Image (cartoon, rainbow, N blue to C red; front, side, top):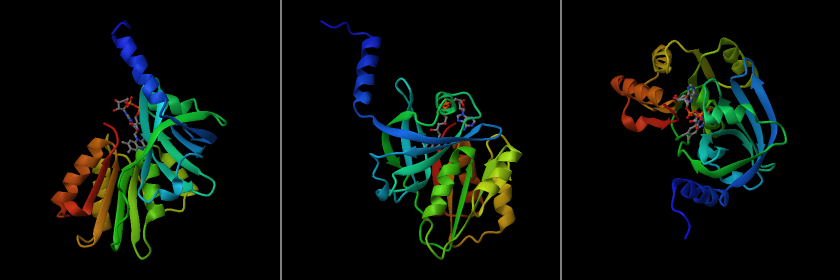
Amino acid sequence: MEKFNFKNIKRKAGKLFENRLQAARVLEVRYWEPSTLIEVDLHMPFADIAKWDEVPYIKFKVDDLTFRDYTPSGWDAETSTCTIYIDAAHKGAGSTWARQLETGDTVSYLKIGSTYHKPVATSAVVALGDESSMGHLLALQKMVLPNTRFSGGLVIDNEHHRRLFHEYFWSPLEPVARRDNFGHHSLMEWVLQQHYSIENTVFYLAGNNIMVTQLRKMLRQQGYPSGQIKVQGFWS
Ligand SMILES: Cc1cc2nc3c(=O)[nH]c(=O)nc-3n(C[C@H](O)[C@H](O)[C@H](O)COP(=O)(O)OP(=O)(O)OC[C@H]3O[C@@H](n4cnc5c(N)ncnc54)[C@H](O)[C@@H]3O)c2cc1C
């Protein structure tokens, strides 16, 4: 009889996941100097990209039995390609994986899921996030409906990265300097300066969990109903 121990369970679990993995090819890797923000173009021949009508996420295998979610921002169903942005300024399995990616590599992912974020038909959509949700906010921008005013703030610590954001994208999203650890105070200050109306403004919050939870609380205190605040927490 096979010995029942933790190593065996791990091996079996690994096998179970391995059978479900799909492959994608790294087309290009670009580093935003200083290289803590990594932009990766992927070819995903097995993904049904034409069906992405809510902001998706891809669960990548970043190490043995270790998975992390990253968000495709721009995508093209015809060529089965997309781009992800990885905030790799900290130490972690995901950022280590991202830092060693090279053109031509094959990466594995377990699944593609939905965050259920999709801009609603309203006059103003406001997206708020941090470096890790840059892809998410850009994906929202791509989906926004005609006649909707799209705007938002993206808290970015590095001054050069804030400049690059303006240089690289045509986007009404505004890079906001980070003045607090998780970014919610900086973003709330920015929101108050915009004088958004309570009616018809729908907020989409994505990024680190503390920022998302605290921002939601602050917006509720300003009188925005909970139905007008959509949240997606990433990490804490
Ligand atoms: C639906 C979804 C979509 C996501 N999309 C993206 C995306 O497009 N881009 C992206 O970068 N991340 C994204 N994330 C977050 C990502 O999945 C990982 O949680 C994150 O990259 C941290 O993983 P790690 O292994 O590097 O660090 P971990 O090992 O999980 O954490 C190590 C330490 O670093 C801290 N930490 C983790 N992330 C950060 C960070 N960004 N900045 C500072 N400290 C951090 C943690 O608090 C912890 O103390 C998404 C998460 C979800 C749930």
